[in-house]
Length: 527
Image 1 (tube, rainbow, N blue to C red):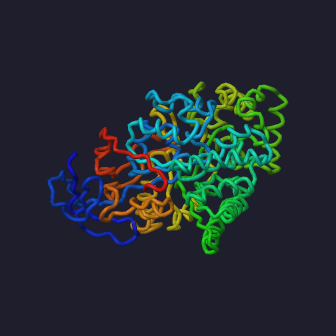
Image 2: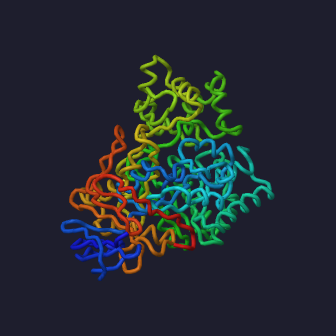
Image 3: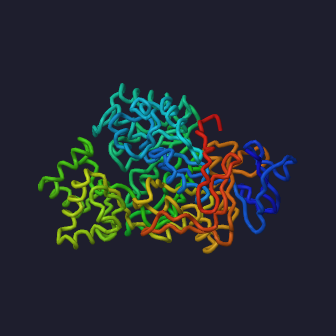
């Protein structure tokens, strides 16, 4: 294909330095400052700005890798590279039950049998067969390792079980995985202690990888959960990313400064600690997450079946109402059932966009029974949005120039509700909070999305506009760039993103994908 020259453009180079006016060329998939001296296509950047392609450090895109709609959600906000497999769950290193749970989400190119997901090496064969728009790197989920080796047992692993998990992880690292993710809020990850996590992270540290954690608690016990994550990194020597840093639960609002202080103190003590964030006042996860983790020792399906019995319903209701601790009480944190909005329920589509309070009132039902019925009718497959984050805490975190931006997003299909973060996190940070609210100057906000995550992940040829770096770029209008996705209509592309370039090819322009698929699989040590 022809090389590309972007002329007369305001350049933010990803380092946090002031912008400059210049020309940037893409030659052979690499960047060159100034005119290239060879014939090429030309984009006039007059009045526009250019930044390195944004790097999403917190994606769940491996669950639908190769999906054009999910790629649209990425590149339409300027994302050119995603780190997938977060929150303890990954597409790779999965058993047949886990692969079955992804049925219908992943393309089927003929290499999509369970054997291609069982280990990271065979998974790469599958992934390479897909048309990829964006670049993708991969973490291995701790929940996957535990389910394969221990099922849903609520206990410490035996020595041979821990060795088996370490072996599975080491094999993935050998094949280029970037590290380990945990979802200590979810089961069976919630049953793991710090000794188990530190032992696994020692393997990650051997390869210079990262440990990304959805912590055990993000509400009443969030500071203790942060101390656990930092101590895990300290013991193992690995790099740490605290996922989607936030304060959940309305009575906990106001402690963002304490959280940021813990991170900065950890860095000062020698721990390589980082964090990412999506700039919204609501979180999102499964509706099953409202139920205390000790009810899942026989697995999700068994728990859903038990919800048919009055005894189980009474026990769970009592635990949520009494709020005696031991789990993150999402219903309580949202101020009740009106703060929980249904985003996905395949077998009961009429409830989409409604709160649990709305659903209960419409049916003349008790809200607990409305929630339990919804889970039973959908076989547990219900996603929800939780309005439990305070804006002052969110903006305090976003104002820290050392905290990265991430989506925590996935957009499977245009007819399914999702959190607007999937389409809008980066442009929301850049426009609404950077330019309009003045939380950070434009160069600093762009560095949080480019140069900083490249440093944290070891992407030595990404995140900067400089000679020889990968030709991943976002061309945008600094005066108008902003998110348009809403909770009611989350599948809206952002304003002000004029073009996105990956590997020197224009993949997004005029509000749509161009059909180009230059995305690469990024392997640790080869970036």
